[in-house]
Image 1 (cartoon, rainbow, N blue to C red):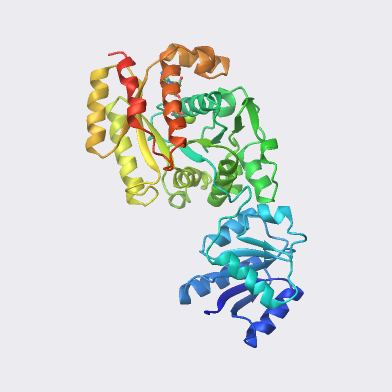
Image 2 (spheres, rainbow, N blue to C red; image 1 turned 30 degrees about the horizontal axis):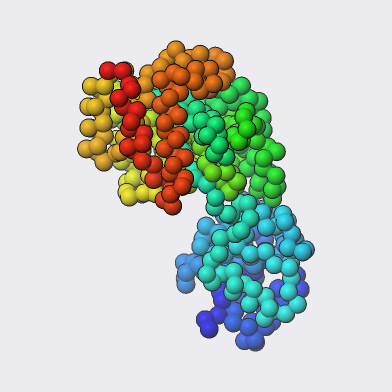
Length: 417
Ligand SMILES: Nc1ncnc2c1ncn2[C@@H]1O[C@H](COP(=O)(O)OP(=O)(O)OP(=O)(O)O)[C@@H](O)[C@H]1O
Ligand SMILES: [Mg+2]
């Protein structure tokens, strides 16, 4: 059997010394590539082994390591190496929630330890608890510049899904102008930054940090302080979404439009982790809904932005995520038809038309409620209900993001020409 390639970080724990001794004598099928004392050394060792002979099979981290939390585990796993926490007392629930590939009590013999680590790394098993388990779908509402109604749609869609009995979460990851707290009349705290920190520290009771404007709809409001985004690394966004997705059927995410690489903005006076939240949400999505105004500028910037997201690899050429555009604020069937034809030529599917309905949308906004509540029979509310119905039907299929455009498109006839 090929020996397991292992990196340890164990502050002199007994199990680690025994393992190193057994491996050096060839008593267990393992090579200990590096013994580290702290996190920086683990990263350096993983980089070193990855560049010479590919990623190590596993990092074994002692449960007493002071730096271990879900963010550091997620960061370590990015190198393609399994993370196993060893020495957890009675397989500590907190350690499990860190999203490690394995959590082991300290075994008495190195051979037993290697047998358990082998079980974890071959084949890679998804974690079975909260932060690692997959349950629902992630739907991000993103668009090119121009405020075409992303937040209004995200809020209305989430509310409607919950009304249809679909357990739903709504997350405001708009790092420039978060609006969900205002649109739903919620408190602006705790925001997503606090939520990420709680999850990172192994808190399993995420629901306590959400707000519940209606049954079945848990909302994580945005973080308003721009410097707070520095505390939310991109894998923090992934972690947050994984945790929410594990407990709900659908997680709807509202993001800012800007997808420029933050690194390029380092010289700008504003903090630079902001756009990464949008990119991380897009990368973690099954479905991206793209509202497009029936306007030449909006259409062109949508096609340009989607093309560059594909070129940069944020969005794959052939999903996932599936990309569905929605014509927003439609007033003319003729213009809508032209826009759909243009988008189709650019390879962008158009799911449906959302009518311009300023009366109902504005009324809902001033009442800090969703359109479906204040004007349930309005054209806007009915369009979103249709979209939510199509998404609910998709949940029954095995293919994430496989929303039927036919189911949505029935709406076309109802939009004024
Ligand atoms: N279907 C609609 N009919 C009429 N007005 C709408 C519709 N959708 C959105 N609006 C209006 O458009 C404006 C922008 O909406 P919203 O805040 O949802 O956009 P956004 O894309 O999230 O913008 P931002 O870039 O500021 O985040 C609001 O004034 C809202 O009332
Ligand atoms: Mg918005």
